[in-house]
Amino acid sequence: MKKLNRVSLLLLSIIMLALSSCSKEEPETYDIWLPQELKDIFVMKPGTYWIMEALSGGEVYLDSVFVTELVFDTLDILHPGSKLPYALKDRFRVKCMSSFYGREFHVVSETNDQCRNVNYTAPCYTVWVENYSQNILNARSKIFYYPAAVDDGWESGNDGSKVRIIEIKNEYTPKDITFKNVWHVEVDRDPTLQNTRSFRHISAQEGIIQWRIPEFGVEWITIRSQIVR
Image (cartoon, rainbow, N blue to C red; front, side, top):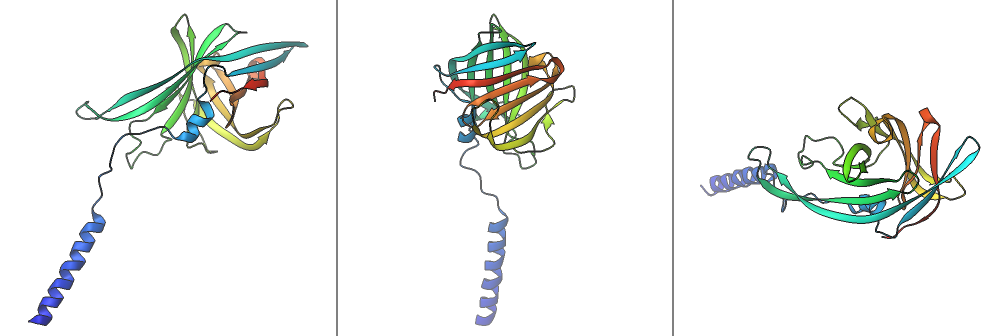
């Protein structure tokens, strides 16, 4: 009888262990916060500026791009069924002005609500550029995603276009200034740049340091900058 009890207890222990290993613990929170590395790339305060240079037809053009405002928002994540808020996520908005184009644009983060879904495979975090005229949004384009890796790219718009990281450089020297950890990003059709194919170089320390439109022969390169964190 004692032997039978020992066997029973052993079987019961094995069953309980199996059940506990199969059970999935509930997370402490469903909130989704932006990774610090992504904020380190794009989040700058007023006082930040980039002096950019372009060459065209033998002429040299200069643009002063500067940050006018930094905004952090906390947004609700809505349950897909009930449509009621059940968690939080954050978003940054870096408002900038280009003196050459006389145009306001924002660099904005977005977080997909499905990030915690085990079946979700796309990057959780994306970064967009939005063009404004008299406080009215004219165009927006996805320019970056995180985790940032060289791959086949991800959908950039409803037209099937893509944003794609095509190269990561440990060091990059476009104009006598060496930038470290730089992503080279291609956008098939960029609404903020007249729906053309565009390329941007994005530095881990200084954000967008270079952009070009091959179709129009336009290329702007940072020649001086000041970054305020």
